[in-house]
Length: 487
Image (cartoon, rainbow, N blue to C red; front, side, top):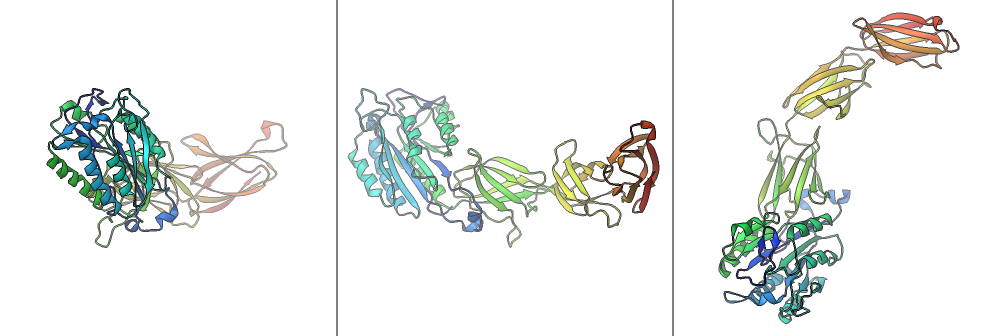
């Protein structure tokens, strides 16, 4: 992504075992920046006409959810938590206001009713989305005074309706001291928002030394940073802002058996793992230097990558480091399969079914004399000759072409004295195996049979007695043509 990516503000939260403590005293401030990112723009062929390295910078809408509850009056070093957070947000919105393709909005809670009594519906969108509205957000924050309670869960749920549409990259930044008075579980909120297409990827900054159990409670949410002073907080803030604003790049290494990224020229799809939405459809490419080409994906999503080899391979839980070059390594060693028979000209239309060894599911169907690139391993083949030819345990090895040969069929022209029922049976180790039936309405038919000894068993269509069955034996040689008259 380009430098128009969102800045991040951090909330103050206190958790125990994944739940927000409802105590009204809180000596340490946690600044927790929830940002929920979604590339809402639907994937289509038009968007893919542009090279991956030249994708248009999407519109980014950043919704600030600001805690204006009475607990924000609490002191933290040089000033109240509210004033420190307000000043940081003011600097942030000034910076974001100058960014290309960024729109801002402000939602507040705990600012309309005094506490007590507790009003858990106290949340409101104060400044809607628009361009160049930083001054409105700063003016609103200067005017508001912390007074009420802290309905964090309700505010997060309400924010889904604050965005004008889904044709943007939608981000939520929650700034709070973490005093959830109405009951809120960030993990549950994250799951609910993800089901609506919003992915939770937070940065968490803990001011002061936190109990390990509290730190552990953040594992379901995101990345944790310590900041014991205002100065260290500013340092951490700058680090995270740098990560988010810098371009994030990635390359997909399709590894061969030696662990080298030599495989290429195959389609691959990036899915948002939480929503299942297609994000990017690309052909893996080696650049002019002979290394995997550089991509610029949105770093805010967790991805599932499917590489459309045969069979496909996938990699889950891909989380990109913002502002860095990321290597995505996928094991995809491949070799080649070729199936052919003799050098005759009869076999161009014969098909071959490819299955993983021991698996009944069809992986692919290929024509004889074609070449198929397959993930290394063992495969079972069913060649659609008459009768079928089965080859088990075909080994495909790295960068090697495995050629499977079968006997050239022979061409047999069958003629019957009248219309009737004709079954073709093949002799196999003293047993007769059904191969096919001829047409009941035609007295002449040509088919291709594999070499071997056969019997044609015939009975005229109008005959009502079994004893009038006629049996004709014949032999098929590879690559030959013959006529068999059944009479």
